[in-house]
Image 1 (cartoon, rainbow, N blue to C red):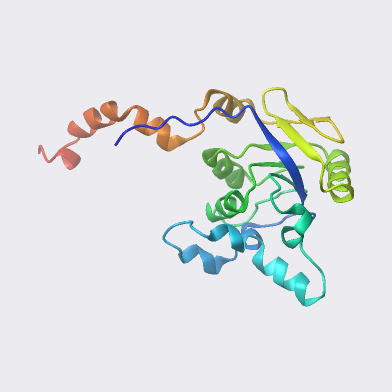
Image 2 (cartoon, rainbow, N blue to C red):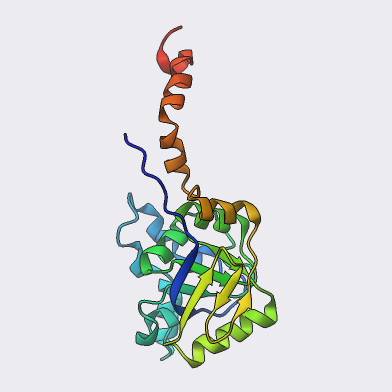
Length: 204
């Protein structure tokens, strides 16, 4: 198998998609019934499905169903986003819906790690700042935003400083965020180690 280098991610640009609410867990991001899929194909259309259906039953519309937010790339969220079970399906569904970066007050640790391995930068701001960003994205859905990973900044109608741990940030900037690419790039070394393991090589 040939190694494929992961792309360097210095910035993400596009329209913002605001989703309000603290403690939005992975079961709300992608309902458990979609965990039975063998691949992630088509999972994007089911992101927030139960929330979307619940609002529709009340005559309301979820952000992910509003025409003005279709094609948005940067998700704005509140506190402890992605908490709950450690399912990779959650960031997979967001990515396949079209999300390429997330800005929030805080993230669940495993959700954050899953996003890193998919090439989705997650950056944090304080409570007052995320509320300003949510307000701005709701008042002008057409506005363009740029998350500058390299410069620690989100630029748009509101320009703010953002935070990300230095480890993941350096992975995005060096193109080393994809663990599979990293593994395949050292495939000969992996094979050498495997050849010296009797339970792998059969050389008992």
